[in-house]
Image 1 (cartoon, rainbow, N blue to C red):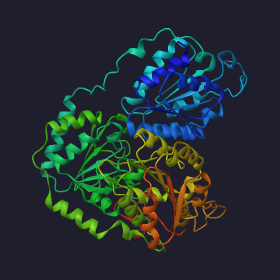
Image 2: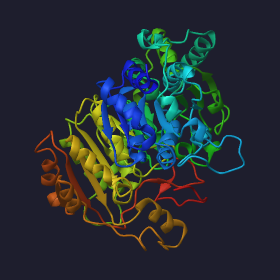
Image 3: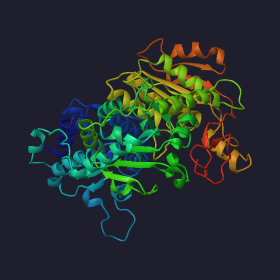
Image 4: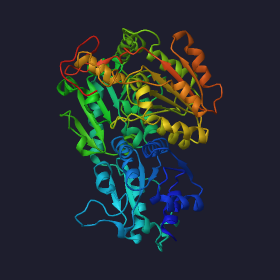
Length: 576
């Protein structure tokens, strides 16, 4: 069998329904084989970064590795941002790049390039992949493909890259055994005494704790352990706060769901975390945007139990944690099997309710006019029950969405966390929509990030995907503008000065997408209802908000996590 045919059939064998790509000379054999040999949907994007983000959205929704393809040279390098995003956010993905023929590669020659568009993408991708390989021997291809898919999904998931020279794509593969093998289900790691000892210790501390709290991280979703997590929390009765990557681990109406913690966390959730005396951290890295710079203050006054699959994350920034290195799905199953006695703390639950009532998210809107962004997110949630997922781009709107979108039990929330890549949402929504069998998906983007990959509107039109797009337009790069307001005395170079936006509603019309524009609160309900007049069709709603609107609350860096702007002022410089 021709190698290109083998690659295509193997991708189908692994349960991949769609492949995302931008055509180029070095992948023409692969695309022709996908078309002729499989039933896989070939999704032609308009930028390789878009293809990569679409594969990420697909992998996040399905748990099956997303697949993106690109040609050599600029095609391959354009994938790197999406590859890095998959790596930092633990998304299973396999990236396949075409490479020039083996005889056109420079090898050890003291030259920069031999073949046209020859580029060593393997060397570039290695720091942000679980593995990156160049296929020099066609006989290695079956093993490499199998290892790539297995590696992408195992342990802490992530991307793998395979670079396939064009002459290798045309070579014959004789070992077809892996195309017929039955894929085993993911084997759960065996229970271990350390996990039992860890859990027994936590249960003893829980029995005497007055203010216990669970901090849920993105590892719960990436380990496909959400149902086990929900079962455990229901049995324990312990309130659950969550990081940006775990907003969707519990539905908004779950009585145990506290709120978002971190740099732009719900004020009440950060205060609850600061007041807790026992913290169980599940699948969270405890990075600076969760704890703030004051790690001593973060750990002071509480015992922290921490479960993660990567040993290097333990006692990294926040030291003194009682740590367990374990796959989360395995740990949660063990924990469910040996639950503690009733651990509900009525006084603690009442305190958290008091904090929520004292610091509502919609009251954080200060000093601006027009539409309240947190109110916008609640109203968007009210009309979007049919959505399978919300996909947030990166910026202030991302924080408002994470603070205030009300999620049903069936809904996901996807965003670019570790990479924080503007331009993520629109292409990722395409992958998520197709991974969810064309169920509706809602995009929330800012005007800045939306302009990075707006060309993918054409992909949405061509496929007629039911993607509802909310562009929050404050006519600036708002998050960095807010940073400049705090630290640069209002010198707004490149965020407000030297930056402009088009009419996004008119732009949508140019692509053939129905649209509307709203900038007054009085018109918001009608505008949001228009999004869903035809649930099966795309729609773009441009929401104009005041340029000076800031995302609050915001952690006051250098102070404890409970101290947040604008009521407190930072004493240290932070990243935006």
